[in-house]
Image (cartoon, rainbow, N blue to C red; front, side, top):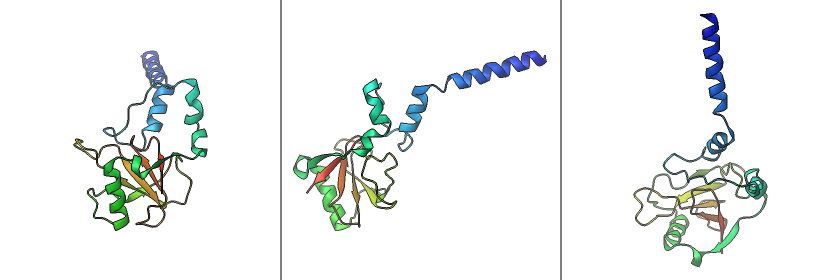
Length: 156
């Protein structure tokens, strides 16, 4: 009886540890800041993606995009940020922590996130603008259309 119980415990432990493979832990880490409904699907990564996953990408500056290249809804969001609101969603203006360090590093409280409406979407969608510095300032803003997985700096 004791041996059967010990054997069952060993089997259960090995099943648990066997389920903690590379892909499971990677997905849990990448999706930590996103809700299940908003987390983008994670494609399989090749060896060339290892540098980006290890944080090497965090050191380089995000690509730039002009305001004219942004969707029209982004221009409206920038206008609302400059005006100080009112914003269409209660979550607009909340603290953005930059935990993945995809944006330039600044003290906590520097960045705030705002929704960019997505036509036809039943929820807030995946598009956001993240601005740094004092509120109502749009000089240090970034656009993401993939729920914070990548950013483009909004050029003046």
